[in-house]
Image (cartoon, rainbow over all chains, first blue to last red; front, side, top):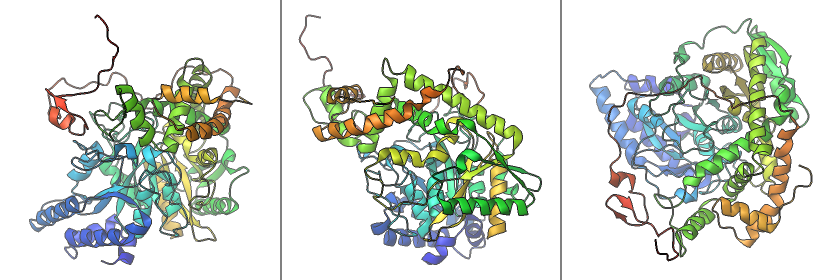
Amino acid sequence: MNQDELKKLTISTASELLASKKLSSVELTQATLDVIEQQEPVINAFITVTKEIALARAKQVDELRAKNERLSILAGIPYSLKDVYNVKGVQTTGGAKILEGYISPYDATVEVLMKKSNAVLLGKTNCDSFGFGTTGEHSGFGPTKNPINIEYVPGGSSSGSGASLVYGGGVFSIGEDTGGSIRCPASFCGLAGLKTTYGRVSRYGAAPYASSYDTMGPMARNVKDVAIVLEHLAGQDARDATTGTAEVLPYSTLLDKSIKGMKIGMPKEYFGEGLDPEVRASMEHAADVFRSLGAEVIEISLPYTEYAVAAYYVIGTSETSSNLARLDGIRYGIEGEGDTWMQKIKDVRGKGFNDEAKRRIMVGTYALSAGYADQYYKKAQQVRQLLKKDFVRAFTEVDVIMTPTMPVLPPKIGENESDPLKLWLMDAFTVSVNPVGVPGLSVPTGFAKNGLPIGMQLIAPHFREDIILNVGYQFEQEVK
Amino acid sequence: MKGTTLTPEEIRHIADLAMITLTDEEVAKYQQQLPAILEYVHKVNEIADESKGFTSHVDLSNVLREDEPEETLTQEEATQNRKGTAKNGYITVDSVITSGGDN
């Protein structure tokens, strides 16, 4: 299989080819590894390529298939994991230098489930360190480039997951989303990407950023593939007490339902000043498509939207400063220098965290410190309650909320280097979803004049991934 | 808060609380950047104090499992990523309290 074919390959097609034995998993895996090897010097989508694991698993699946064993639809299909998921015996860095060389002694639940499905692990993808970034430029292992146009960013923080799928380095990838880290690269790379409901997929074994926001989810070339992967990831896990009891639905079989009569709300706060005109036009076009499918598109209001970014970052950086306190170089991580225990820890953290990680840890430390916690952390928690009420109220009026995923087109690499706050504000449309905990799906809506993709975000009530997958799929079928 | 400023000493104090060594250049940079960020996020104070408590996503409480032993990491596995030495399954570190005393 050549690169052009790999770039378009979906789970459905790949699994048919594998099941009919027109293609072996070893052939598919080797072809994918060849493309990765060829593309990586420029794109930098992977931190670790697990070539041996990939070929061993592929061989094993081919053997099982030769014995006519009943196999999962994902069996033999090459995928990647954002480098926040632990895989036993493989390096996990979270995109951060401070963890370079850390070899996981256990598997994350996400990886346990993928392995059980006999999917083929290609490697661990590049990301902004600990998920801190909107562009993929803040990795300790160098920036990832967007293969659609390498002068531009692929979006972050699951940058390598997005970029590798664009160039054909895998059929799907599992990202992690704390404030847009799946949806943003999906939008900038022209892919489908799902931020699941908080508690839908186990967080066990995934390096934390902000524990009350972190969610796991698939990125793929179309909505159906996302639905298929979700079926294999969703559910309760005894190792993550925050996983919910809501029934796991057969998402991929619920996509064909008509969306006639469905109510889709466009929050006016997301269509104000600062929205790129090409993004706006693409959203208006998408709304027309929904109308043509019989849905009713109405304007709604989420009045607390303007406070979302501020509240998001206060809570996010606070949880970060607490979560990352564990990185002391003692049990794992790079080695510190200094005469005392304390000096060594400070040295490890001083040289192991990048600029953005230090900035966030310090903002969070400040927001939680005595005398400031009431003004920042506690206040932000109150705003979070109000944001949640906004969404609960909106979902009494509409079935789905539709917004642009990103307010702007993908920026050029290096464009926003000197202005960290500007980058934080770029997340305005994705960050409100994480404090609320609802699911959000990014679906491509078209291309800007410069050839870069545009995406819309579809949001549903808690644990109703089925609704946005259905709506996203219907849209995709109509425009393709 | 409008006009938020931080002195180099305050930046160093925050970094100290976070246990991070900063270079002089970093102190100067964060002295510029952090006030702008803090000023922006202080916006949360524009909201009247009408909502109490914390947000929970998943309506669950007291999530427990049967107390049955299962396989866990061995001490060797759990400490395999250390840079220093280990003794009796524990990681050896520098002494935390260094001053000499009678106790």
